[in-house]
Image (cartoon, rainbow, N blue to C red; front, side, top):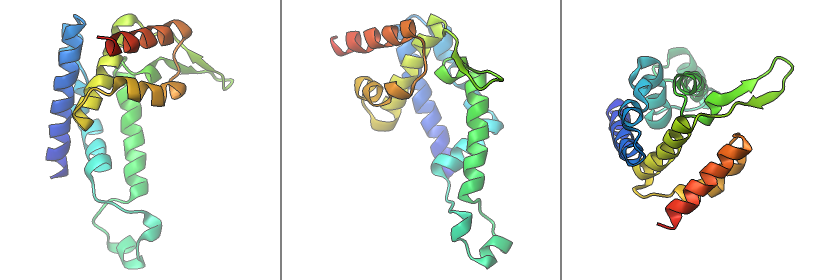
Amino acid sequence: MKYIKYLKYIVIHKWFVMIECFKLGLYWRGINHDLSKFLPSEFFPYANYFYGNYRSYKDASTYEKTYHNFKYKEDVEREFDIAWLKHIHRNPHHWQHWILREDDGETKTIQMPEIFLEEMIADWIGAGKAITGKDNLKEWWDKNKHNILVGKSRREYIEMFVNKRLNQ
């Protein structure tokens, strides 16, 4: 059942993102958006993380630890982290794709091309619509913008886009 629920979410999400991409003239990006989520290396960890039934290993009994037939929270979270890392590196519409961690520990932001920046915004809108049923871009951006690492010009572009959309 969790796999069907997650598949349903992906299809709805892709639909909303595709509509937003089409509005921006990004037809190919809209069609190909998040196709990697259908790969087993992403699909199963995501489904387990968002729709699975699991609990922490520390809360399990000795019997359950020995003879369990379900996943533990720690395993699900580790598998999801690996899947997320694969996802952001396969999909350049994520701002995390454009972060470079230097050997000396410094973090560098590389300017995201505009086509991916626009797809990222369409992705945020599509996720909001798929999860809440409404366009909550402004609210989401205001809540999350301080955690998003993009250069000054890209941040200004996002702010302009969000404000323009709000005034439509």
